[in-house]
Image (cartoon, rainbow, N blue to C red; front, top):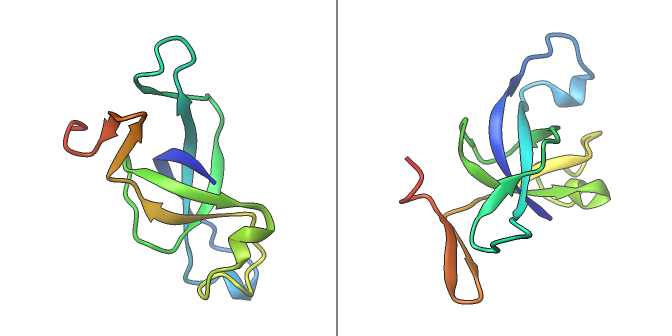
Length: 105
C-alpha cells in the first residue's frame, strides 16, 4: 500500500466491458521527506487507479497495488493493478501528525 494525492481523472470511452462504470483517477504517490521526516513529499510518478470510494482531485488516498488490488468485492473480477482503498484523514509519524486534511486547504 502507499499514499497518493489524486491529480486528475481518466476518461476511456472504449474499454473492456467489465470496466464500464468504474471511475479512473490519476494519482501521484507521496513519501516521507528523507531530510526532515516531518512532511510528505511527492515522488514525481503517476499511476492510474480505479476509484471505489468517490475520491476527488487533491484528496490524499491510500492505494493498494498488484494482485491485492483485486481482493475487494468491487474489484475481484476487474483487470486492474491499482485501486483506491481509503481516503486519508491524517498521517502520524512517531507521534507527530505530518499530514491532516484539516491543514490541507
